[in-house]
Length: 313
Image (cartoon, rainbow, N blue to C red; front, side, top):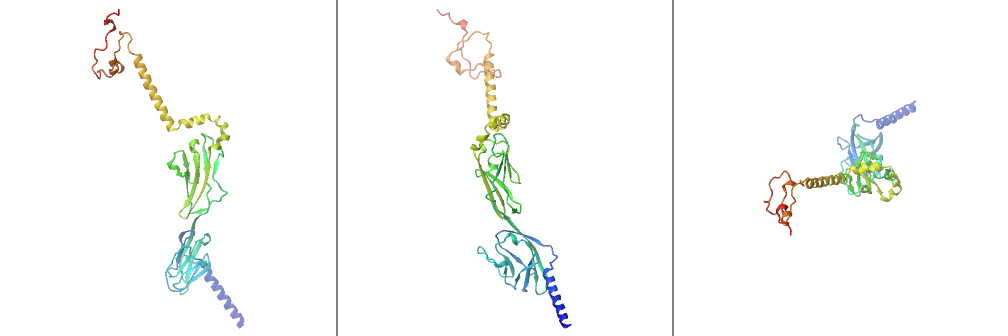
């Protein structure tokens, strides 16, 4: 009978200990976002000199003794970080598997301290086998071209930016349109779009990139395909601002030339012929510009009526 009582007390103590270790605080955790590879320190608040036991997702990981720090898994700092000895739980070289719900329990009053939800920020490297995909694989002049960046696993969601020949697309041309999902679209592909394309995936915790090169030699197989797309090529040329400027200059020059030809042809031919003297080239005939009724320089008597000339012998 005495042995049974001792056994019951032992089982009760084991059950109570397991209940204490598995019982989690009901406090709302405060999120802490930490870059991968960095160092962070958690404090069992409110601070006391008593020992504190740290848990992660219901499992005991270490015990902080008074004012001495406890280092998770005995890791060592990469650099020269120095954490003051005031009873921190120090996590060096933060890894993805360190994510979880951290909380502590003080030994003097068995109360729970602050609860932390640890999140690790990271950007994985892009697999060397993953390349920027091009659609269509062989570029076609005057047709749309779509480039897709391979986005690796990352948290928080990364930002994707593009460069062409090491220059941001915003500094090159308005032909490029980039979206947040890592897609770059060229509405009308042309010869000045050849070059080195690179996409950059980054957040505050890391960076990754992929690149590809589009060469003019890749158009060799698509020359025949340009014949049915002649209309599309003309449409792309008409959208070019340089082409429209040159066309406007040509139309303006033609209009001025037509005006001058008409002005010369519309001079009344019924009047007597005039003989031109050398000084004529420095004078102005008012009939060439009907809007100006006064000559810029007084017209001298260098124009004489052919009938008034003495007959030639």
